[in-house]
Image 1 (cartoon, rainbow, N blue to C red):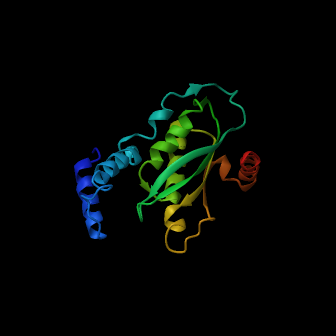
Image 2 (cartoon, rainbow, N blue to C red):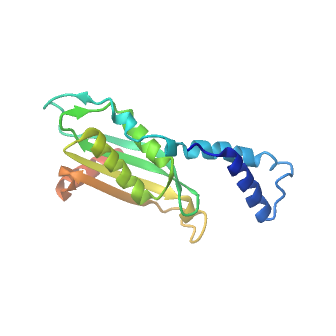
Image 3 (tube, one colour):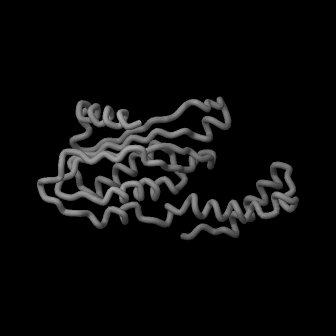
Length: 189
């Protein structure tokens, strides 16, 4: 189902009225339309298949190397609890079996899954599951580090804090194997 921009516009106008603003005043008169356009972009992942970028894998046989690690993938998502943004960095590692994928495909998976109302914990797991299904590697490690608008802009207002989540599969569930990759992630950060 596509984003219903007309419903978003009506809802935003209602929110503006509910907080005591005049949705028709100069400066706000086009806000409902702008929010609807923004939400169509922010939540575009709801209409996309996260496995699509992984469909064109490259068979390489036994000579795949030991590790593929793509560090510092920027992402943005929206917390499903307050509809506030969380912005961060993803680090994806996998141990290839008999196939690899173009490196630009990995950020596409992150972007698709992040462009949904989300919680970071589930996003981390969904990225790991997509990589597992699409690449069938020997092991996966996904680490996300993000700053949450709901933590920094409201409540305790912890502007300097970030949240780190991790998901691992296969051979990378071994703590020693994860530690080596985490050290590599830190070396590039």
